[in-house]
Image (cartoon, rainbow, N blue to C red; front, top):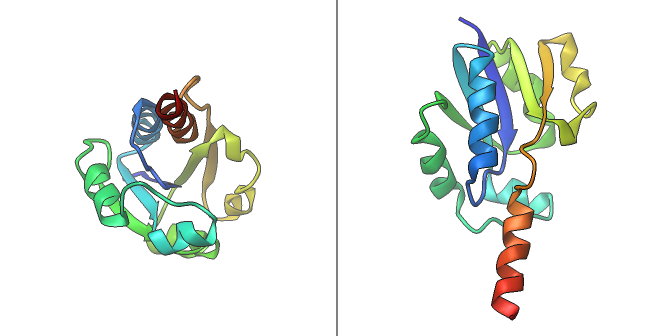
Length: 132
């Protein structure tokens, strides 16, 4: 069985997220998603609209996702790759090169982002519409 791992906040779930999860799942048999906890988001300077538990429930309802684990620190990735026997680590290409240190443990693939969509863009669009 080929295991694939990706990470993210997955706030305001959108079709770009679904595309990433679908393409990640196509690379293997079992997709693990490391979901940023609320406390880790705070460390990163992010605030999610939905709580960790709500975002986890959304991810668990997606057919491509087999397991959701908490992402609590930047440093846990090597431990997770080893513990979950990961064959392929996947991230969006906006992270290209940032996780190459994992190549010692598994294959690392950076997938192209879906053009024209991001959580940041959605939040900006809502702010624009609320201001008008």
